[in-house]
Image (tube, rainbow over all chains, first blue to last red; front, top):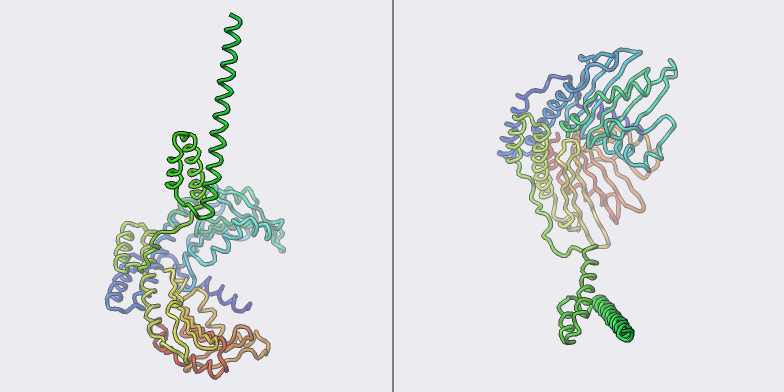
Length: 206
Length: 279
């Protein structure tokens, strides 16, 4: 069973991962034309495949818009824009995945945004259901509000460096924003989260 | 003068006492009628207020009070139903699949306006329409009867969310004598399907079961498969097809493994593969 879960997670993480900039309006138009003609000729499977590609194109477009909205700096950490990464929508990976990193080790951070993914509902359930949250609560976790969104803050200590890392998960409808910062404190990560335009991201990603 | 005052006081007291009596009577009558109306309602003798009003009318003029009492009881009962009404009308939902061409056109317009969320919704709707058509075609390709069991058309089911990763699920049931039942489920393109197929096709399943003989690997029309048997649920045959599809046959009260295999082989897997675009 563990093997099965591993395979699914690996596929989900790397299934259709592409560097930013590969999808374009031409792709969308081309896939739209294929979808229309295939459907018109009764080739349903090809029509469906083209539509999957269209969803992928759209998620890439949405992801690019989101990347434009993300801060270019968190505290003293500057964005590593060459490491920006987007995962397209359809196929095995599921949903939109936006990844951006800041700074360099040992002081670094990252923002991840996933949307429309089958993984979100379970995370949302844990974060937003008091009973589940209570059952899974530990002393290194607490719920806070960021720009009005109920969020889960998790603290961890690196056993080698003894430095404190924080992860903040912010669910918004069908979108989950995760901010991770190494060697930080609660105040810094909360301030960083407040610089992310959450409402705009939720709106464009929905 | 004193006598006049005493008489006046007595008149006022008498009048107020009379008024109180009248009001009390009216109140009692009202309560009585309300009780009757509720009793009638629950015993099913009278269900509408029209009957109650008619009865009042025959009682003559004492009747303002009665009428009001009765009205209040009727209001009371109707308010009660308003608080917790039971739906007994309505035509349900129109179950027509989404218009694929219209949704593709909508997606095009939304994309050109950079309304990507809207465009995505329209494409998902178009995809939902296409997947439902694919599912219905697969259902049509399945046999009418299998091993003496007839299809139960009312149980036919095609499920799709229109999300590429959420996949398409098609279900069909066959029922026969002696409580025999064969359920066929075709799952395609779900997020977890590729992992499951890789797992089944590469023997991962076998490694995890530690030699218990309630399963074994087999082949259905040249496709690798896993057959399982459970005393309570019967036979289960899982056939991965292509990279992202799976056919599951579940047989209840099927006599032998050979019967189960024979039933499974009546399904044309190649047609299903073709419809799902699997190789």
